[in-house]
Image (cartoon, rainbow, N blue to C red; front, side):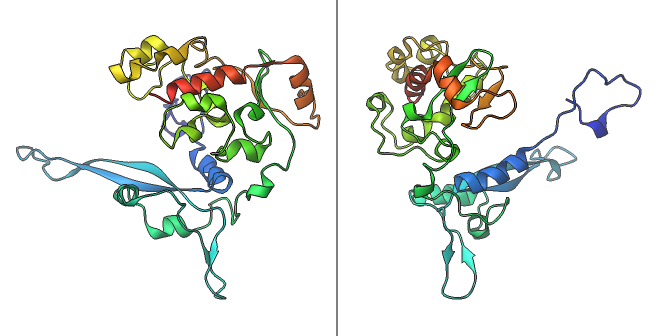
Length: 278
């Protein structure tokens, strides 16, 4: 994974793939599609050892990235011709203090998304568009947004899941407000592509044994893993497709996947409910 400009010319690099960092491009798209703003904060590490000759000197620099949600439509002030976005509802004083410590400035919230001045999806626009599912072309297993209480459109999958979803299984999820954001199509696709083993740090558990070995509180939720311990990482390395109603080249359509594929949405739902207690 050595960048091209750092590769030594005398070595044979033909078998080493070239990777391109598209993080900024992805953030630019998500800013418009999901009504968020990303902002960066430069971190500086200085030598703090008074006995060192380099005491007080900068020994390392890095950049951390944070995000904040904004309301989907900009606010127009009078007839000045200037529209600015405002922070979304739901942040309390503690949240705002944390964001300020992370380096958030007013202009980070007010500016339009980097991909263009777009208001995002309005509620009435979410059901519009082609019916889609997410399918693993190698196994023909698929995730159906309808089973998550979300509109089966691109907008329905990339926006936050409705909080008033009529899903009985949500009653078993953790009671915190963020459970609605975790138990959704995006969360399901994420865990299907994760590394299957928990390797420490912040990795989510794959099964009851990993969850129960953390502490007693989490151990009480391990029974929710019954029958879904093979979900995490199940699609890792597979060929994943977001289907469409209209045929494109040889890709299967949504209708064909619904007729011939295997719906594993319920299994993923139950796994997400289990890890909402992590």
